[in-house]
Image 1 (tube, rainbow, N blue to C red):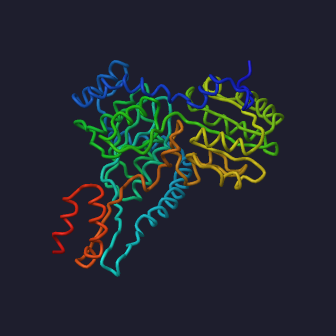
Image 2 (tube, rainbow, N blue to C red):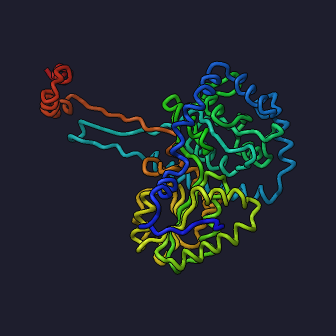
Image 3 (tube, rainbow, N blue to C red):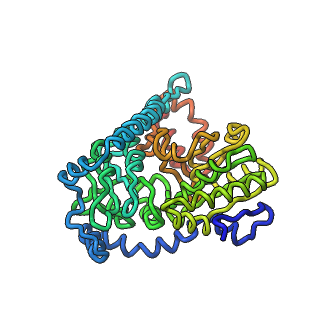
Length: 432
């Protein structure tokens, strides 16, 4: 049985196309309903509700907060190679975020009416930020870096990290070391919808956060959606996804390798190749089958590709771009003869990787660009996690008497048309 199927863009069965383009996101409404009782329990009972859930799953947790002894033990178990990788990634992310912050702080004051009117904005960081990093059977210290560094550069005062515990009630040492070296002292062994609820409402030990960021499964995504606007969120970042635009000159082995990277995250992840060459599609299909067979994550990848994977053959590259913009992927890779030309036509994607050497894994770990991105088509409405996420603008405006006098006629005309006499009077009373 083929690991991934090839479809013609014009002959793709309607049900198949719908399943692939909607991903697992069409289940979110039902998930929100399912987790609502749990969210209410956490709001009502706090830590007790969280601990009860882990007790029922026989995960031994007595204290939700990670102790200093656990951090010190983790330091002994982490390799020097990992520490070197951590330092390089921290340096790159910090450099990117520092440039972002410079743009936010340099806000121009607009002066109008010969100096009688000034309008400007001021950017303020959030004080307390909740970070969710996937855990349990997964170990993603890179996500802690991606979420924490923009917050620190932004000037957020307190970071609260929640991570699902492993079966033995612990957290991976690499993740703990990264969090500690970034200065995060509030680290909690809690995951899923209950973690988002705990951050939204606060518990006896978990501080309340105004902003919650970080990727997770459909339960985490549903909780973020359900608790908005109780909390502000980055985006509904759910199961990982990758779409690759490639022409016949691309390397099929490289395309196959990159497609598989997202699929090994879980069976609800997605991987799609769109190409204008049927021969290339067949070559990629063969490469995928060869490479998947060698992976320890083989079964997960196969299930992902079975449910949400596809190689789609189009009439030309223009149609590839149309499909990519319609799909609005989390990750979009372009491996064509003139990738920048294609990139300039993209209107909906979380992060775009231009050219054959811009591997998706490089963005996940090392380039400094953020890997916390909108999924499920949400790239049409949301952007990547960045320094901007961790604050908000306040708008200011200042008029003197002459400035208000010069606007008097405009104010009166709009107030008359909109039948709002108090608006008109509030301006007139100052100029009488």
